[in-house]
Length: 339
Image 1 (cartoon, one colour):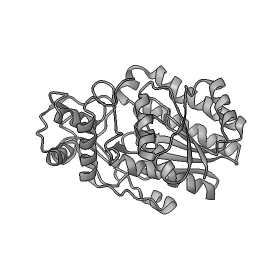
Image 2: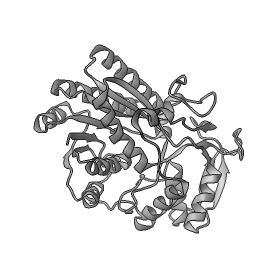
Image 3: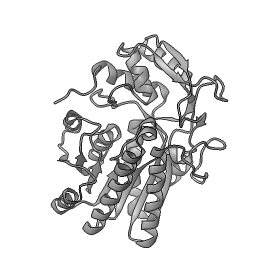
Image 4: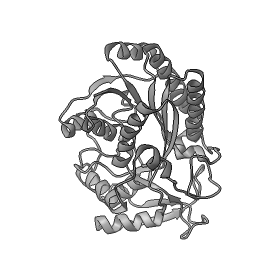
C-alpha cells in the first residue's frame, strides 16, 4: 500500500480517482482549496469507499502549507489535478490561469523535491495538440495549443521534461485527457460545474432536467459529417483507473511517460445530444450559434500506447456515459449542496 497525495481531490476527476486509489489498496491524502468544488464531494467519496481520505484544505501556491503536509505524511507519490480548466475563462483571464496552473505547480514540485517525493502523475490535456492536422491523434503529433488553458498544460509538460532530464530520479506520467464525462455508478459523485456548464454533457443534462432552457451548440459549419464539433468522450471512471495504472507503471520505469487517455472514437455534438435523449427519454431543445473562440473541428485519440504501456483500455461505452451522467443529474439537480 502506498500513500498518494491527490491535489484537487474534491474536483470531478479527483473524487473518482480517490475511489479508484482506495479500491487498489492505497491510502489517500487529499488537498483542495474548494475554489471550484465543495466539501460534500469528499464526504461522498468516504461514503462510497468506506474510508476517509486524510483531507487538508489548502492551495498549491501555499509553500508553507505544502511543506507542512509533506512533513506530516509519508507520501510516496502525487497525482496532480489542482488547476483551473475552462478554455473560455482562460481567454479572458490568462494571468489567473498562468498563476494557478504554472506557479502553483512549480511550488508543488519544489516542495515535492525537498520532501524527497519524485513520483508524479500530471493532469495534462489533449488541448496541447491544438488543432490536429489529422485524426486519430498520437502522442508524437506536433504540439500547438490555441488557448491559455492549453498553453499552461503545455508549459507544464516542458517543465516536467526538463526536471526529469536534470534529475533522473523523477518518475513522471503525463496523461493527456480527451473529454471526461459520466459519473460514478452510485450517482453520489459527478461533475458539478458552477453556473452554465462549459462542457457538453453537463450542459445537455441540465437542459434535460429543466435547469436550462436549451442547449447552445457552438458552431454548425465545421468540416465534419453533421457540421458540429467531434470529440473523444471518455468515462471519468475509466480515466480515474488510468491514473492508478500509471502509478504502477512508474514503479517499473523511470523518466517521463506521455500517454493519451481516450477511447479512440469521436462523436459529434449532435450525436451526443441524440444519445443522451435516447437514454434519458427527454427531448433536448437546442440551437446552433456561432463558433466559440479556441474551439476546433475534430479531435479524438489513438489510445494504443496507453494500452501497450499500462495494459489499460476504456471499458465504458457511450450509453454508459450518458446513463451515469443522467443518474447523477437526476439525483443531484443542483449539484452538491453547499455547506
